[in-house]
Image 1: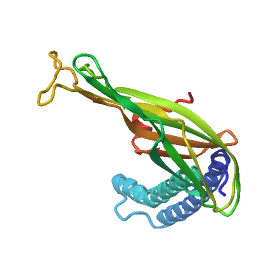
Image 2: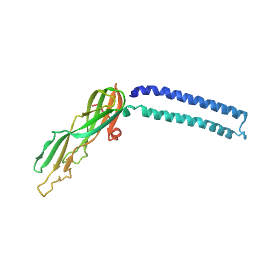
Image 3: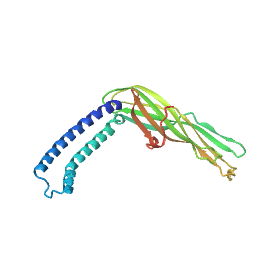
Image 4: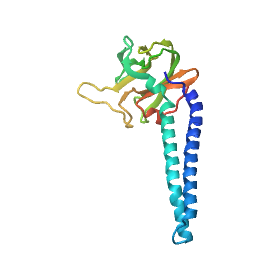
Length: 243
C-alpha cells in the first residue's frame, strides 16, 4: 500500500530540491566551461549584441533541463499524491430499497396521483494491494433533485450525507455496504378518461424526483486516502460538506 498523501507530501520537496540542485550544478559547470572557452576564443565579431546572443544560447539548455525537471517532478507528485485512488477501487450502484414503495394515491378533484419510493446506493470498495487496509472511514454525499407538482420553478437540489466505517479490508478483497436512503416522489395531474387536466398558470403537471449522483471519500488516519464521484463532474460543480 502506498504511503498516506501527507507522508508523500513531506517527502517530495526534498527529492525535488536534490534533483534541481544536481541539474543546476551540472548546468553551471557546463556553462562555466563554455564561458571559459568563450574567453579564450571570443565571438568573431566582438559585437555586444552577438555576445548577448551567445550567452542566451548558453543558458538555453540549462533552462530547458530545469523546466523538464520541474515538469517531471510535478507530474510524479500529481500521480503519487493520491496513490490511494489506485490502491482502493470504488464503485457505486443505485438501488431501489425493497418494500418502501407507497401505493399510488389520488387526491383532490383534479386527481393528483403520487407515488413514493426510497432509493439508495450500494458502495463497493476493493483493496487492490497486497496488504490489508485498516481503519477506513467512508463518507459520502448523495445528490438528488425534487420537482414540485403545480409549481413553475426549477427543480430543488438536495443532498444527503452519511458515513460508514470499515475496520479491516484484506489484501485483494472487497466489501460492500448500502448507503442511507433518500425519498423520491413521482406525481402527475390526471384528467377524466379521454381528457387532460392542466394548471391554468402553466405550472408543472408532472413532477419526478431523481438521483443525480454520489460523491465518496475514504479517509485513513484523518486524511483523504481515496475519492470517487459519479458522475465525475460532481467534484467541480458541487461543494463537499461533512454534514
